[in-house]
Length: 398
Ligand SMILES: Cc1ncc(COP(=O)(O)O)c(C=O)c1O
Image (tube, rainbow, N blue to C red; front, top):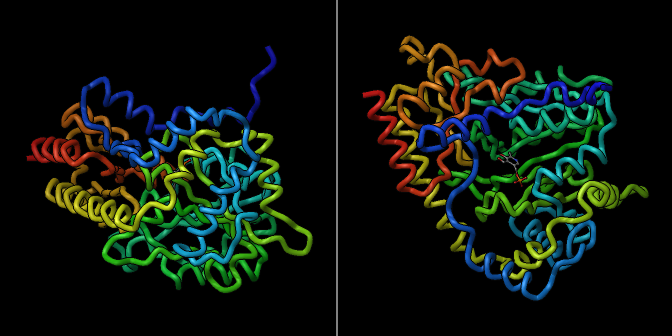
């Protein structure tokens, strides 16, 4: 037999899915995978049912149906402050599909993309799959002289090489919950502009920022839009991870280069289009009222408090997330306990001992050793499920 493509060599089942499997086997509570088990808003569900009944079953435009793109552009102008129109919007199969289309439209195999560590594993995995090298710039770990997860601009500058094509920023970030400040974004933008790099931002958690923190979209800042692709989607905001609807907002056409069109054409080859009836169904429900976002944030704020307080009471080092819905907790103080020698062992111990699933830290680091004393807990759960998980954790560590 001829060998499989070498691009598959490093592919493994992600720890996150393995944890899901193990938790299900033990009948425990899964705080591993970043899926929200709350219901999708009724207006969206009803919209999709109507679209299916109306026979909206055919391929759509490769970049998404026009009214949905208009609705996304309107939201980008008003919520994100990005000066754009619908021609710049590419609707895809989740923000993940939009990211793949972005990578294929911008990067050659052999290019490098700078990202910030700890990072979301799909970012590095998707880059690698396409022959692009992720270059991880570490953020300041908690407990040091600097604020937790602060960005070191000198390290960004030092990471730029001849091969660097883009910088990728996730804000609010998975797994750290870091919400990038305007100043931090401006610092990276200055480097990107000086070296003529593209910027890609993943803003899928844009509606989840705590304690009044502002979500800043890089593309809204002066001089950024022309080099920035903004990724977002509906999976997290509307609890519809399995619908697979997300989008990119590309730079405006300039000097004959139409990034959105190229990304749309890539999207066409990969997926033809995002699921048609779901696009119509979602569009019919947009915009959602402001109260929806306020209630969601209040709900996650209460869950964040419960999760952080529980982990701190159990002996973890907790840096409360500024956004998103994960706690990347340190467990060095617990490392002397049996079963807590490293992150994989600790995750397994918690599944077997407490019946709670979480993700080992190594998933978020280029060198697995750097994640050795971290575990990620996701609190996007129904409150009674989260309370059950927290009771289990407290009982285990009591
Ligand atoms: C940072 C980040 N981006 C993207 C995604 C996936 O988004 P989508 O469902 O829109 O593909 C996730 C899911 O966990 C995520 O954490």
